[in-house]
Image (cartoon, rainbow, N blue to C red; front, side, top):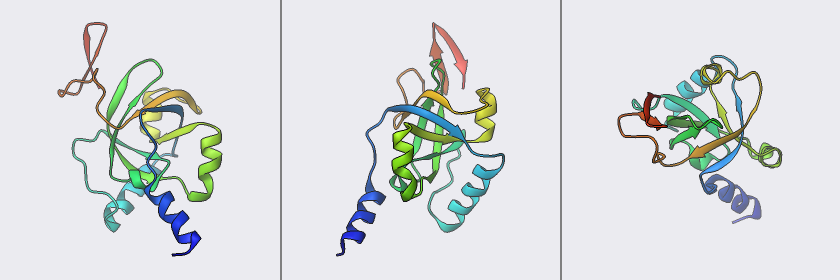
Length: 145
């Protein structure tokens, strides 16, 4: 096995420990839907009827995984299906600026984003504050997510 093959295999298999907090950015309108259609067509991911949206994370090993996002204000959204990842050559730069997730333009609008948002946390497991009913418990109130 060549050093190149070993390095590529490691990059494909890397999964960072979560939760991880950092910067969220968003895709242009309609791009997430195009990526989802492609990933479904080539079999990289399976349909996720319970997922409320889709995201991109850093590594290809995350494709098909479900995650939850926590907004800096504490609101949690999910599950979200991971359908895209960074190009290998972009990983170092994204890590340097503490990027953790790309969200859809639709979610960015709901969150009122006009640019990157720092302080977003990515969870691999459903956070304890989110009940199986899909409600977020905050300050004694149940809020639909």
